Length: 131
Image (tube, rainbow, N blue to C red; front, side):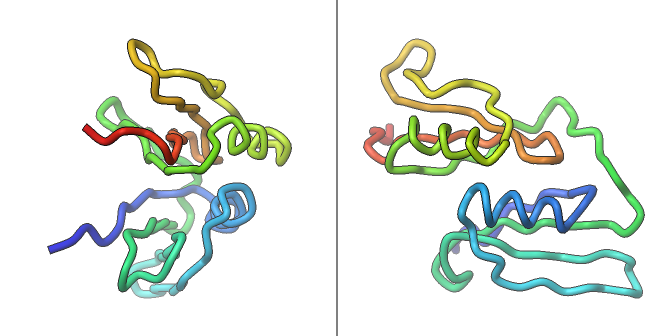
């Protein structure tokens, strides 16, 4: 078994694809319209779906926004340098929720950014210790 993807519902597919590809450096792997169901799926990631977990963006035609709810947390992305990754997002006009720095009660360097639909994305340094 393996984890295939995480799905997020988005209110503007083109805007979200632009954010994940241009700001976060993912690649659009595939996209397909489902006219009978009135939705479009787009799969993005840092590598092919056969070997990597990817992100599925679901656009339900005509729905512009969603209530994110209280149970959702965030997506985590490992980056070589959290400070640089956060600075790069800022330079591209992205929203920083938490500046890069040590996590609360720990030493792991993290930062939080927000995508166009309000989903939180955590950057974690590549040198973090998995426990």
